[in-house]
View 1 (cartoon, helix red, strand yellow):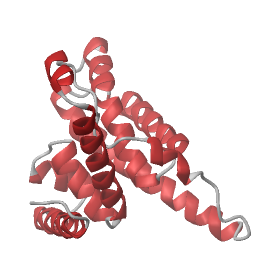
View 2: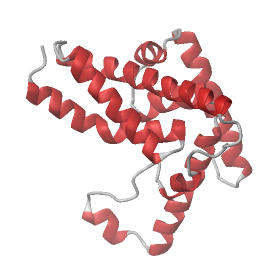
View 3: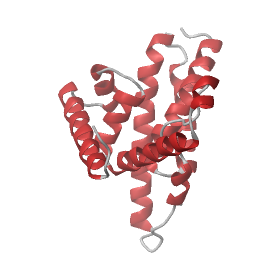
View 4: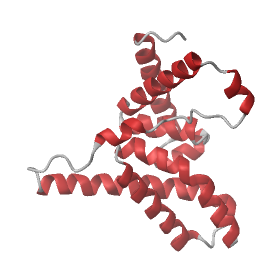
Length: 188
């Protein structure tokens, strides 16, 4: 059983990555924040008695299910209110960085020129843009494997699919990103 401190520490450590992952799925900061908060509440309410080592996988699964529930609600809302197409402001996600630009090491920042920083920032924005264009399952598999650093089995459990499906989704996501970035002039 996880202690209150372990549970609190776990939630603090996973919060930022979960928010970024949710934001990439729903493309709305308020909705992403709600999804993460709902997921955290569900974890605490229903699984606080589980061992700490089980919490990461449980949380990933809860986050995935909460995100799917949000999409279902949106689909229902859009069907009921078809005259009101735009419920969210997609321009908010443009200011959000996929990777954090700042480093904690002062040496790397001090030695980096303004041109290098600008170039790196532009690269990050291009990558972020291409990740957002991926189909939902490919984006989810890619983010779980390479952002959350889950292995294939953990990703399959979090997504509710087979390990082969995870490998397929990741492979297709990587190929699509590679092609898109090469087309934009990036060198492999």
